[in-house]
Amino acid sequence: MDRITQAIDKLTAKQDEHTPLCAYIYDLASLRDHANEIVSALPRNCEFYYAAKANPEERILETLAPLVDGFEAASGGELNWLHQCQPKMPLIFGGPGKLISDLSYAIDIDIEAIHVESLLELRRIASLCSQKQRSCRILLRMNIGLDGIEHTRLTMGGKPTPFGLDVDALDSAIAIIREQPHIELLGFHFHLMSHQLNPQRHLALMKLYFRTFKRWCRDYDLNLSLLNVGGGIGIDYAHPEQRFDWREFCAELANLIEQESMTKINIRFECGRFVTANAGCYVMQVLDIKQSHGEWFAIGHGGTHHFRTPAAQSHDHPFFVHSRSPVTAESEPETSPSIKAQNVTLVGQLCTPKDVLARQQYIDKLNLGDYLVFTQAGAYAWNISHQNFLMHAAPEMVFLD
Ligand SMILES: Cc1ncc(COP(=O)(O)O)c(C=O)c1O
Image (cartoon, rainbow, N blue to C red):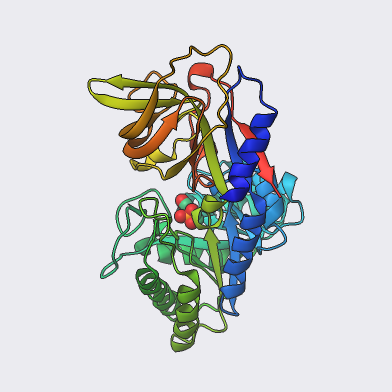
């Protein structure tokens, strides 16, 4: 965290006293190291795509592009953006409710693969391919039963959801594909849960995917080359020091691939949160400290309109306090409120009681102008926030390299 606190000190040296700091700070060097570690631990027949929905900032994409095999887009907007930012990067395109214009664009740019989410979408792709007389590679995204598999906090399959095809739609899907010479079925796609914190449970899920893939190849006499196993590796916000043991997972995955005779199949990951979460911090400078009905509150410059992650996940976000060098702004009254050894709730500037980043957190010492530094803020943070609410200014975006 030294690089982050040094960056804060540097930023504040340039700061004018009337504009307290509010910023996202990304450590691109640590992102690069982490992505390198992820990719180098993978078994031989695995590929790694970055799910850009976690954080599509241009500098993040630029940092990851040389390290990963491609990017995953989950909307027409993302697809456009990714293709603009990194025109040479292989792209894959998933997500429910794709517009016909999105599908058309994907076919025109000769996308690596479209992940088909429904029979109607498959028919739309077939008809576009016929009209254009162009081919398209696809994966069928499947929503299979999860018997015997432990769920996570965010499970999007094994139950009714808008994602992917049910198993009983597979006969029809295969029939449509067999009639359409322009569609090339490369394989199947699964993304049934996010927030996975346990490597053994994730391996059990991989085993289920492998066995289902092999069964369908047998049953439908398919010669498929690719299995997309989705993303979903989690971040333990409650215990930030505990990390998903990716090395252990990959070592055991290599054994599983051998045991299940999957060595000839290309296994593709598309992870988001695990890639970028630790590379970003959200910093709010403390504007006010007050008591309400016996409880302490610290109000920071910013809030959930910039950083919705804690509200979206209903958690207390991990943070630390970086003290401001002891200067009192001339315009501040001499007796400013401060806190010693208290539980404090950290909030933003919004006029809603939901604008809470962490509740009742023990803090040794907090003064006006100190910095609340929320760590693990590099994924599903700025881009999932309701940024226009109350028309507050946007945070500074700082990229350290
Ligand atoms: C289809 C699909 N793939 C990949 C991801 C990335 O998941 P995560 O950020 O948990 O790795 C998601 C997230 O919602 C998804 O829906």
